Image (cartoon, rainbow, N blue to C red; front, side, top):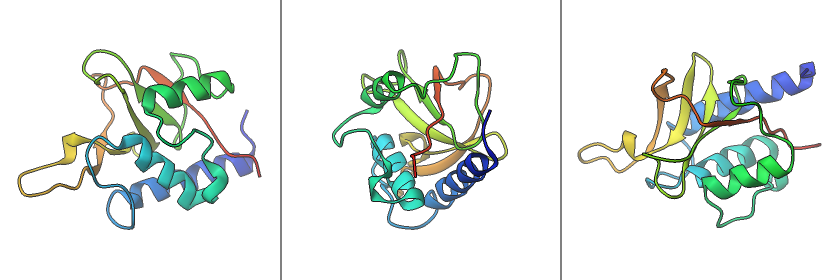
Length: 143
């Protein structure tokens, strides 16, 4: 059970993630999903908030969170502010990670958002049955 403070912090994280898809100094290069997520966490909670070592990919990050007890059950879709991971077929050898935001949507850095003449990979997309995550993590840094 989450405390009121934890719920508020997850909501703040989700709002920062959505804002980061439109403006600010957040990673825009496609294929840098974990860097984007790290930058959102640091903008929300401070530089020391992100525990996963730099140079990691989504697969490494999921392993780190699994070892530290932040992984939710496979059927648990968590709440806004949770990290959604995709590993396996169709997600490359490094996997993919996004942040769940209000309205059953995802804030992310993904090549899905790159269009003709636009190289900014940040964006928001709807969650559907087809793009359900393979893993869900709830992580809040300790004060």
